[in-house]
Image 1: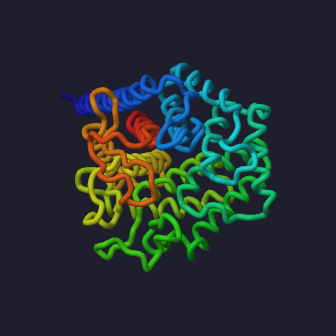
Image 2: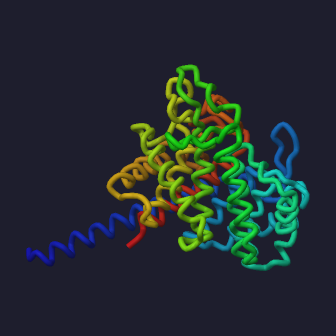
Image 3: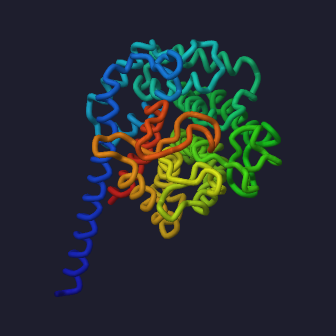
Length: 370
């Protein structure tokens, strides 16, 4: 066989394998989402976990972020219909109204922004809420790192929608306060990990003497940086600052992946709360896949990491009917909502699926690239 023919044969084989892998990723994501949409067929119905909560709460907001990511690679109109029905029901308003300063209440606004497609009339309550918070002059609301994911991308979206730089400036001042000042600074600049809130900074330790870095908490920050950077773009003056943290965090997370492809609930303390866990693993998959696609991370180091992570999620988490196993329920640290198992139903199923869809969708884009 001529050398040129062999090259084309190998190239065609590689493209075929890539297409097959991408199709498998999409099919798995669809199966998980179909399970959820069938079980929760009415998106307006409130949740009933210990008490009644409206479906605009943060757990559902995270799900819709994942759904919109799925729509990006699988543009089925039923996804938009489902999400729009939800947004209409809640009148495109943050949970608990326009006076709230709780990032969890603002999370739903991220999907409102994506659904509205620039319609400022629909987004009036979201913008009013952010304006009210900025008018307080305070930047110390994000006292837990989850809040960075729940609110920071929304401020970036508001900036891009309106052109008002105050939204982005406020978000960065708030981010820096959480990073550098809250509890003495929740970001460990040496290790690249984050403490979840002031209760976990040193001298707090896990029972084996290791620091407590919570997988999903660190994953929330990682996802937020991705969502903000891709919103504001490389030319924005804040991009390089966020990129530095993203790269340092990527290195930290790469250093503690389990051999089976997962990350532990307690990232560097497998003795205390080790074991397979879906949400943190999905968020790290999301961030690293995006970093690879955008040339921020090196293929040689990070591609095997995301491939292992996806293989673990696809083969060991997703049940035949689409139910997701190994999802740690709500809480604020590794010990919460234990035990995390293949069959246990978490207190909320929505945010775990949202994390999974973010990771699956970004990985799909990575494996399907030409």
